[in-house]
Image 1 (tube, one colour):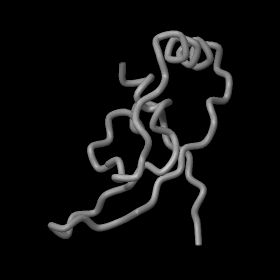
Image 2: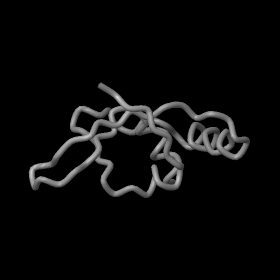
Image 3: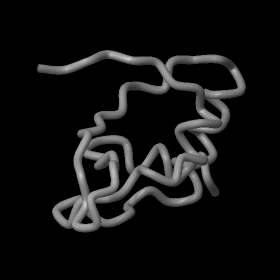
Length: 78
């Protein structure tokens, strides 16, 4: 079962409960792609969907695993 939920960009980039799973690919976007995403945000274009999976870590704390959207999240934080 899944849930579609909107979240502000500020919350998405500042949330500390979002973790990267081990199988997530490495960062591949360069400066140009990062810059182009920021331009899209400023023009209020849709920037796509990120997929998060709710989980519990080894300490029993609630976390969200970022399954899709690493490149965009990284571009926004930089």
